[in-house]
Length: 307
Image (cartoon, rainbow, N blue to C red; front, side, top):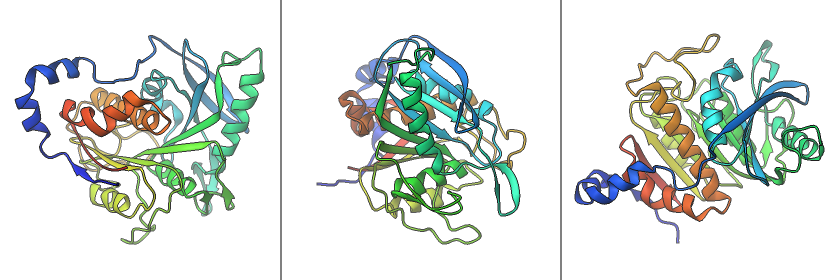
């Protein structure tokens, strides 16, 4: 049975179970993170990309990160490295195309299929650091802002304009989606379109976001038809809580100030991204974290979910 749980009682639980929660806070993530993460540059269908991966481990799922509009891939290195430490091969491409006559960094849903092809080639290439280490059957998507909207479009199974140059289908390997600072508001209006997703979707939302507001994100969550789904809000984080620094060059600035420390924000967003994706791909410890212990253990986070 689907149940929506609102965790407004979490601080009472912290007080009532201080000793237990202190132990939990000392190890915030249930899944084992790799001791080290390596990286290398590559190309994916002609796009320059940075790849972050655990120094150890095999059959690693691939996480494609879709950038915000005109936010260079280098601005996501801290997020990508942290996400990779939970056992993902994280690919962060720069995808340039013309949108409504303007050229810039605008992701598109076709990148999902291109990334599957790239992953298969890397796994088969003896010269690749990921030779025989990739799970070719599992792809997850993470996205920020415009990239989040693109990931939502792909989650429906059919990516459409403007999030794809032409309509195309999601790859069969797609297992789950997580977004930050994303919603499904019709551009130029206040209309929020339903998300008819075919895979689980988790929405991470900064409550100080002045570009993609919390109310728009929460309404999109409410209008998301498929389950599981989650709305994970982060106190004090604005639209650029996921990047290495505030208001990256070339991107539209957020007029709303962020009160949360940047490093804490990035780590929190990456940790919850990892736990949501792991939970949807069969990790039992991650499921406990997302649906039970994680909210109470994290003073900056509140989780609403349906499963």
